[in-house]
Length: 350
Ligand code: ATP
Ligand code: FE
Image 1 (cartoon, rainbow, N blue to C red):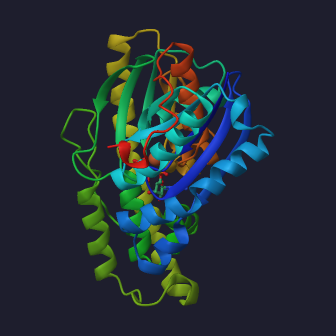
Image 2 (cartoon, rainbow, N blue to C red; image 1 turned 120 degrees about the vertical axis):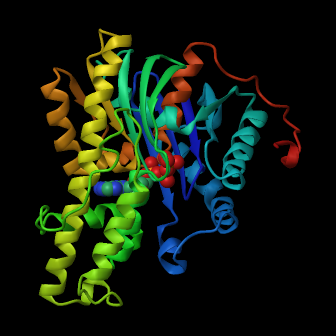
């Protein structure tokens, strides 16, 4: 089986071709990070226009780099949600156009399921059931994956996701917003993580849910009461100013990740009640590319006799491989839609 995967749920346009033995034949991502920096955010309408502009060439490059044409494909997989509907539609229309023209089945893919299942490309030993922590810009989920399509949610965020907290903190610290999360991670390495007192969220809630809105506010207050020069980007600030920012970054990161550690510890216990045989914790989504997050969670997992599986960073942030791979998993089990009519009008997709 060879599947083309298309992803347009947020601000990256991505496509990839993957084979059922897990071999990645190609992987292409076109990022809107520059727009984000320029305008301080991307509206769904701008993001949609950007997707429309590049989708044809992104898909073509994915096919070219895989050395294939459409007729070699078994099916087309595409993200159908969750995400910005205007943006999702660009990917879905493209997928249906190809599928209609070349008479290929379509697999509709859930973006978060794809973040989790891509771990099976990286780690061939990874069998169901497994526990998964998904940490990204919009989600913070603890899910027990019992089997393909059979997921039990153990916890979610009651407000913001951790990636959102990283991005907001990075902005307040004057970091390069094209890469807010990674920039904050780098800065934190220079700082003292115990210098700014911040409270770990939801200490008294003995469950697996998350909350990052309060931490975001705590950090904002800490920044406002510090004497850093808020109007200066970090690249042109003094040594002393930089070290204060580094202390705040390190303190934020420590507490943000402590919250993950506590919740994972509990989720492992909960999961073992339902599935005593679980051996793996999968950590995926953009924030899982953070090395500090990986190291800290590795300790938690080892302490509990499990194994950590973290896809390589390029498969943690949004990508086409995860969509193609999830497509393969579903296709193998006969879960797909028949080819759309070749002459389907563009606006047929609702
Ligand atoms: P979702 O998957 O919830 O729909 P998304 O698709 O926008 O959200 P991803 O691409 O999966 O999100 O992840 C992006 C998030 O990951 C951003 O918030 C980004 O700051 C964060 N991120 C990426 N790399 C790192 C890092 N090294 N450290 C911390 N955060 C990071
Ligand atoms: Fe994502």
